Length: 141
Image (cartoon, rainbow, N blue to C red):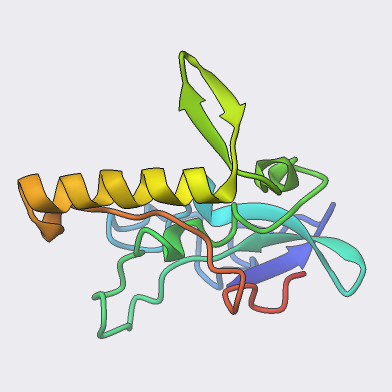
């Protein structure tokens, strides 16, 4: 993860990434998708946050996972408004609109849809994109 103070710009050669941005970067080099960036509070101050994949990681060859590639955008931020994405109660898309529902109803729906996908297409066709509140914060709260 990279952080730097809000309202502070680096230069082409002196920046948070530690690379020379005046040169064309390789296609498999350091790049930042919008989901990898946010403006968050760190020690009570607004900072830019970039959570980028580790190119030396042997688990995923330096590529972002579905979860890891969204860690920054999932951090709550009053600057970028990402805290508005956090739900306190489940919503279900019914009749063309999001409607409040009970946790039992929402979990039952997820279980039925998941079972249908796995039974009809196999477990390799199921992707779950979620945020783990238990440990991915990385201290940027």
